[in-house]
Length: 339
Image 1 (cartoon, rainbow, N blue to C red):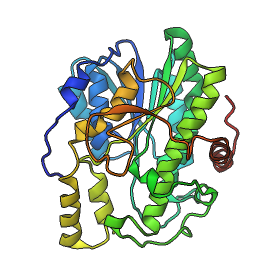
Image 2 (image 1 turned 120 degrees about the vertical axis):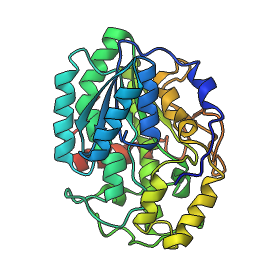
Image 3 (image 1 turned 60 degrees about the horizontal axis):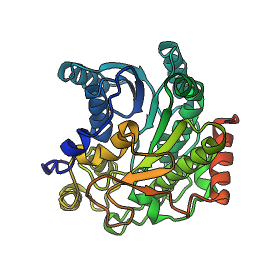
Image 4 (image 1 turned 180 degrees about the horizontal axis):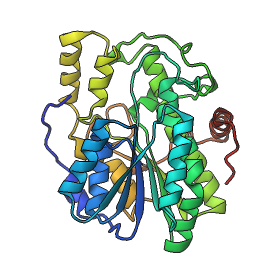
């Protein structure tokens, strides 16, 4: 949903980032939005960038555009449908084949928003599997590569992408991580007061992204301190998420009314590149430490602004929530993730 917002912070922040020469970065969801901007930025910093997307003409077009407009980075695409665990496992195997020297950064960026109450082929809520469970599985699959890179080059990073929607729910509910797709609240939606089943499920996924980061940070701190776990949020950025929500009925009023309401909200936000700064800093800024949350503020009014770092929040960074997230995620993928 484009309203033509100009960059205010991107160029200055990008100029302070570290080189990624000799490093390999994998990013999910790069066909548009913050993922595309992050891939473009990593390429300009000299990285070998692996693009993880569902097979589509959009994936092919974005790969071609990145190659044509970026002379420093190298780009390759691996099919990765986050709504299918089998496809994620296949992608993990292919990443291992092309990364014999390890993986320096995994950015779990891809996400869907306010979709209907429907199951994936694996039986989980389509939003939770796309936004968290498949990223949990992908992280497990490539963890040996991250460990190898950290040993050879001093560090590796896992970057998750949350949003302000994590604040809508406050408490992680285990049922949303279970095989209950299609029975988790229905299709109700009221956008501007963010109520209804669609938004509850979305909020749970974004809380899961933050809690996953807290889990990883707690585990790495003692056993693998050279591997860092960070999380970011984009504020309200110009991406395709809003258009997708409208087309699926997740923006409340339908048709021109829904589009108008979204457009008004977007005017309070920021450009796509400014919105991507959170994950970009997490991937390439030496100042960002493990266990930090990067974004334009931490409250529900943090719609725009420079991407700054904050500590993780106590409502998910606690033993009870971390245990729920890890246990239910392992149950979902059908195997243990041991660090």
